[in-house]
Every structure is written in C-alpha cells, then in structure tokens.
Length: 138
Image 1 (tube, helix red, strand yellow):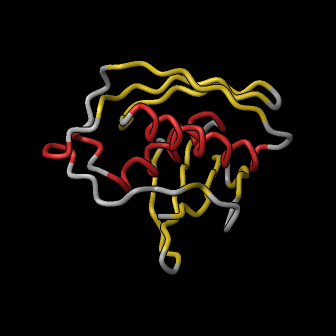
Image 2 (tube, helix red, strand yellow):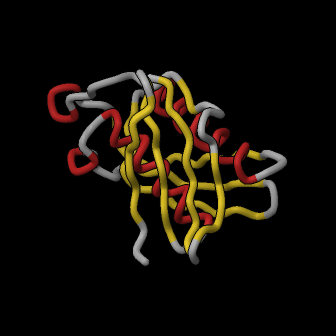
C-alpha cells in the first residue's frame, strides 16, 4: 500500500488521517493532511528545514503532540510545511519539516488551525497498514 492522507467530516472541525505502511509514514501523512487544511500542498516549497522533537507515553498522545508542535512552529515562524520525515524511538519523536514562509497571495491560506485534539484520536495498525488520525480544531 502506498502512503496517503485524508480529511473527514466532524461538525465544525476537520479530521485528519494519515495511512501508510509504517507508523512514521502515517505520522508524516497526518502532518500533510493537516497542512492541506490550510493551503494547497502543491503551492508550498520545501525550502527551509525545521527540526521538531516531542515525547509522549503512548503513540496516540505522541500524534497529538507532533501535530501541535507543527502548529506551534507554523505560528511562530509564519511558515507552512510540505515535506516531513519522522523517526519514532519508543516514546520520542524526532522529525524534520521542510517548508517556507507564508505567502498569502500564493498560498491563499483558508483557515487558522488552533490545535490537534483528542477527539476521534486513533493510532493503530489495521490490515497491514498504520492509521494515525485525530480532529483538528479550526
């Protein structure tokens, strides 16, 4: 199976889902899904590298921490990301995110993400692939 990301409906908020052959790739796909809520991924150049590290006692909490760390980096640096590499070692996630500063005219951001939530939070292996999902508060 190839990696993919999806959005799913949830009242006023938006669900993001990463699906891939590995846990790390599912987390990468969830991050892409989250960024795609804001802007078209095709418009975001992977020019500047930002490193992210977070730690949580289980995979589900780690997903929320990962997405919230990216939301923080996007807000503080005024950036959008379009490429990710994730490495997970037990409870520690180390990642690289590539992107660029927001160009409102080119990126045409549609919403501001407030945070990743615990609603519909799930990280599990299903039918030979990994699923990583949660609801994003917009």
